[in-house]
Length: 384
Image 1 (cartoon, rainbow, N blue to C red):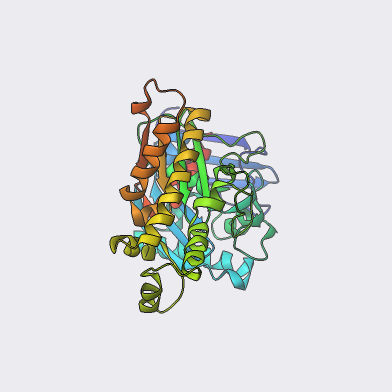
Image 2 (image 1 turned 90 degrees about the vertical axis):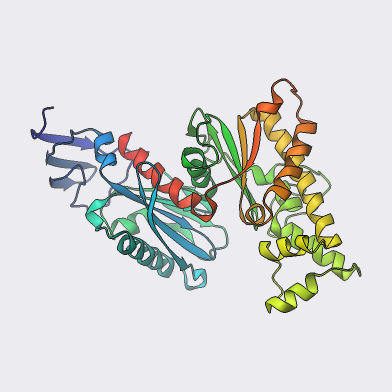
């Protein structure tokens, strides 16, 4: 196509790629659009100097990535290179129900756009990362972890009412893994596994530069790999003896409180008193380690040992170039924790040849990883 030439595009939006709401009237194709709509089809007459391919569209546009969590919503305006133009956070207020939460997502996106000094017409797509069971094909939340009342919620359709562009939905840790792979710790590698250690433990798998979703779109549930068959259950449920039951912040909290109840000396009661509540957060763990608290160090070393065994199993099963560790616990404890995981993993990996080239590192993007990854996956869908 020559520059400036008008074209008529008839695009079939197929199941598995993009679902379009019945009331969609706008098709963002390039700099100037005239669109009509009938169910399942978008008809666009476009005049553009960029060409009519998806790459050109994406290069001149932004996506908004949304990381939906149990306590906070983070929305980021992201360009095609994965750079964050601006971001905004809102408390989730999950107790108010799905409709109220979706409204807060819209407000977070509005605030992020305002900070970026951009208008909606510069946004080509929206990506969402959410924790729980989702139907990514239809943009429907089946159920969400830590968000009550989320059952079969058509979140993609709801957000298209905010702005009529394609909306993609994926697992929260999967999009975070994509973010770390594309612009974070995994930049330049072709296969990696990201493990996020927070209240629970989740992960995302990258194979040949693409997220691996698995046969039933549920790949990456690394938190439920069994490490200790007769071990405990995770405080929030899950598989007995799974790594989440042994090394998540919830499990660490359980073991610390058991130690204190048994009469072990610890600085934790004093730290919690100073803080004004009894929540053993990741920052409290880091402070206790800095004070050489023996109970905290013992519990965390045990968690790191189990995470190292888990890492060795991932290496043995998948043979990735890199394991990336993130999440609140890792962000707070950093290399102190990752070094222990690395040492145990390399002791238990079965293939010793080239093992020194398998990197086990900290994540780089922090809390923005999910929003960045969600935005990049949404832009990728435009080029598919």
